[in-house]
Length: 61
Image (tube, rainbow, N blue to C red):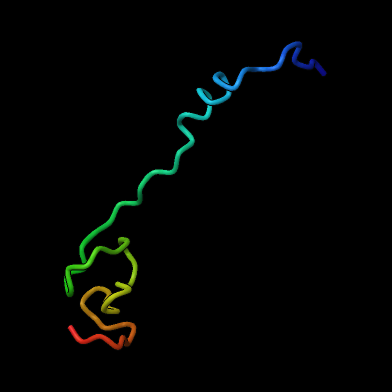
């Protein structure tokens, strides 16, 4: 197996890793309470999904 002759610099290593950052997830507004939530998931603030109450929450809208 071939091995590297010289070590790679930190700059070269960091240039390779420049595109490894995590992307911000796309958020959508809840049609019931207008809070930001992940799409296709129950709203964590009001507990609604597709117009129905799935989770009971302590807060009243």
